[in-house]
Length: 303
Image 1 (spheres, rainbow, N blue to C red):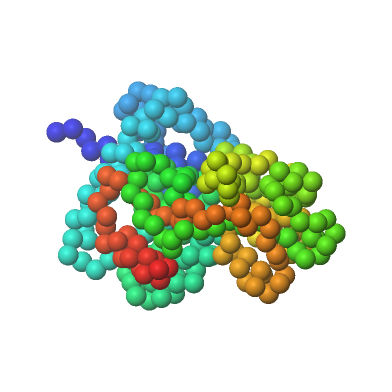
Image 2: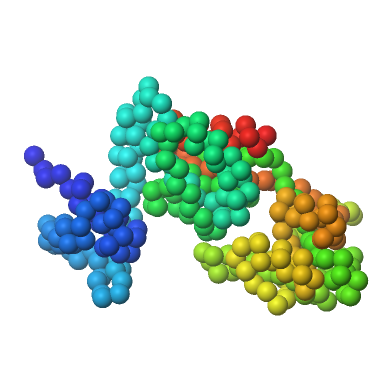
């Protein structure tokens, strides 16, 4: 009978995912020295060096990277099978890992968090604030929340909360001093907040749709410039409130400021609704009870 390599493979997977023996050991609840010994024994059995070690960081060799790509889906399938068997006929339970941009966690999950945890006390919810489009299987994450237009085709996507609009906002003082743009191309004469994607490092180009004519409904983007770049909306909203620039954000994030007159919208005809947020998970995954109740809970509260 062949030796069971699964514990060693899980050790290697954890080290590669965390980039650290210390953090991986904490996750696996073993000592760093024991984890290091397990990895050395795995490398000896395979006859291949999987990791590059230094005093500051741990990286993958080329062989290690290829090996990780092969074993990650297999380990995920084992976890799914074990989880499905464990929870068969039981109450929702276990660790549920969900990734979403930090502002979405605040907007969608935090308001209902207490009720969910009270309703399902056997579920431990881990919230991971991240703007990047995470590989759920590779990162050991159960589900994510993102805009529907950004999702890959190989996932199951469940709509949350319906369509959304983005708006361009500025303070009354800003418009009194600089005027109001009547067309997106006039944004070139205005100071605008810019958003940088955490993963790719790319700067978001403001998106608009033609309101009339032959190109009605066709989307296009505008490259803006200004004194602020951020990877989260709150700083851009605050800068707009302070009257130093225009911000391009989701309408619910500034709804109260607009209602109170602290901010005003412009270019409304150029910002129609679009596909909103979706909760997504791997299409080949058997949905465990803990994830199913989380999906149903969010959809009910956000309806």
